[in-house]
View 1 (cartoon, rainbow, N blue to C red):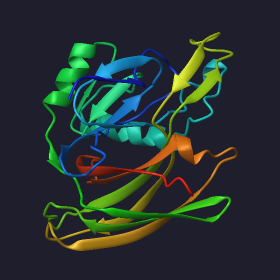
View 2: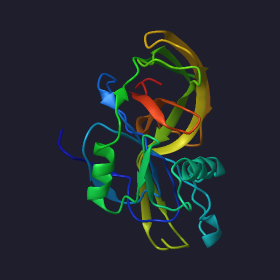
View 3: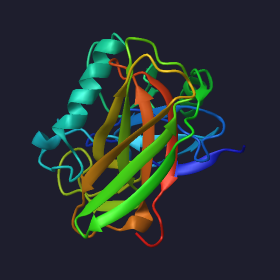
View 4: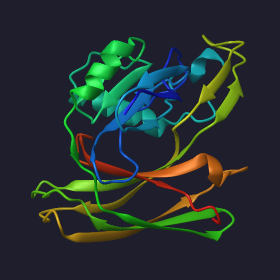
Length: 244
């Protein structure tokens, strides 16, 4: 597959994400890439799901990132410990929860992704409903396609949004128009899985509260399994139905 352009990685100080890459059809070996501070495009090889978790620790500079959350800051702090880093910084990319880099150097980014371990994508099916105008319900059923040991994993579901554009009125990016894709808007645990065979069917449901001006055409769902250190073991992506 040739390189694919997406407006996610680049210079900036207002956001954070962890890296999860995943193939949409769930039939290949996939990765997960999490990214910190997305502003500006870069080319990327291989099937990949990118999740951009915007941190909130740059808000003191005068411009509050509308997608920033202390929840994502806590997640990045966990990677600082797991990856034995000295400090948090943006922009940052974490691949499969096992390796990290600064995305400004495209060759380093591509090498980090290419050398990351791959795992079978889950064979999940997703039933996506909108029970009310203010909620989205996602039911996931299927097999993880890898054996889970006693220490277990948790299956996480992220609702992310593309095509977000904001004017930055203060801070390091003052006067810039910030374009962001793959922005995690909602994030929930589907279930915990322990001591389970690769073929065993698991199932669970999460309900997301929706934001004002929610546009399903700009959103998608990512599902992945991670351990307590946020290392990723398999992931899968779903588009939202046209009639949602």
